[in-house]
Image (cartoon, rainbow, N blue to C red; front, side):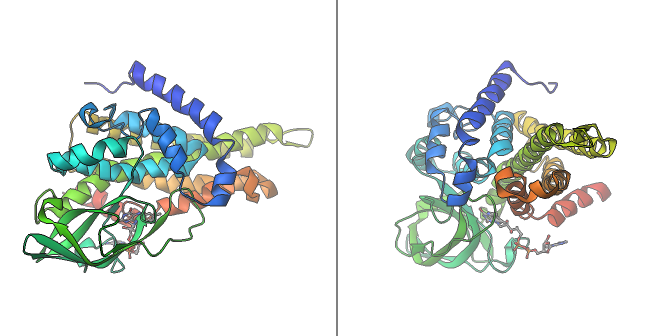
Amino acid sequence: MDFTFSREHEMLRNMTREFAQKELAPKALALDEKGEFIRDLVKQTAKLGLVGIITSRQYGGTGMGHLARAITIEEFSRVYPSLGFFFQTGQIGIYLLENFGSEDMKKKYLPKLCSGDITAATALTESGGGSDPASMTTTAELVGDEYVLNGRKILITLAPVCDLAIIVAKTGDKFSAFLIERGTSGFTTPRKENFPGLRGTPVGDIVLTNCRVPRSNLIGGEGRGLAVALSGISAIGRVGVAAVGLGVAEGCYDAALKFTKERKLYGRPIAELQAIQHTLVDINLEIEAARWLCYLTAWLLDQGKSPRDIGTEIARAKLYSCDIASKIALKTIQIMGGYGAITEYEVVRRLNDSIELLATAGSQETMKNTIGRSLIA
Ligand SMILES: Cc1cc2nc3c(=O)[nH]c(=O)nc-3n(C[C@H](O)[C@H](O)[C@H](O)COP(=O)(O)OP(=O)(O)OC[C@H]3O[C@@H](n4cnc5c(N)ncnc54)[C@H](O)[C@@H]3O)c2cc1C
């Protein structure tokens, strides 16, 4: 089948764009300053069927698919990237539960996740290095019919506020994924990072101290945890962050166009200066390239390709979008002269948002490694 946007995709774009202008644009600065989890916005977008956009209807979702998801994240991130980032990470857990969870888990949690009543974090990274997940030291030991987990996860999106977490831990010399509810004895989230960007979607630590969960909380079977988590991080995390980066870049471009048309020097708008136009052209080209790399991966997932089949395409989209997001934010700040650095003008906030995207869902260098391996295979 050829790539095409359906009528539903076009309607979704109009709806999310309108939502972003009406509901996000007027609040973005205040929300960034407040730096609290945007629970109300999550619920509002859940009512529109967007939190469950990749989840089947039988579990409370709308099943619109990955391309629809990318469009939604792009449009929200264009105006308020924290909301796009919520979708980026919050939907990893939703995807993992639907694809690898037991029927009981799906029935119990997916409808509540899709309605925004609860949220799920996905925790792989530890202080030993996110790029080397096999070095993790969190353990899950089978004692009777329960697993006992001990360890500390760091840099986990939604950790401070999540109701559920999918935790990857060592079971012997393999890795397994577990579903843990907040409130389980030994599960704590003692630390919230003070990042300069994406301030509506908090990031922090999850600590497990003799945290006991029943065997039935395994996701995807014992020993399959790393593969399970990485498939979600790739299909949902990387494609999602590519869409966030794209939206951030577009938001900066929108601001640059507006500013250069309004700002007059030498008696005319600076948009008429060719040097300024050349920068706008560079930005425009980079955005077009990022857009199609991102849409392609989402569309391939909708065609039934597995994250493993299209790991290279996904790595390309993540690498490129996140690379241009921060570069375009800087270029835009420069085009706007002294005004560019003023917080109210938003591009400097976009720069803060964009730097967090670089390591999220796998660093830029590890994306290059994935692409590099495919080139010489
Ligand atoms: C905002 C934010 C949200 C996050 N949310 C989550 C989450 O929800 N869940 C989760 O599990 N994790 C999350 N992370 C963690 C993220 O996955 C890691 O930051 C990422 O995998 C990189 O790991 P690290 O930070 O430990 O860097 P390291 O792995 O220590 O890497 C340090 C440097 O070495 C480079 N490097 C490493 N290996 C290679 C190599 N083979 N070749 C070349 N260079 C290499 C890296 O690219 C990087 O530049 C989040 C991170 C951020 C910033």
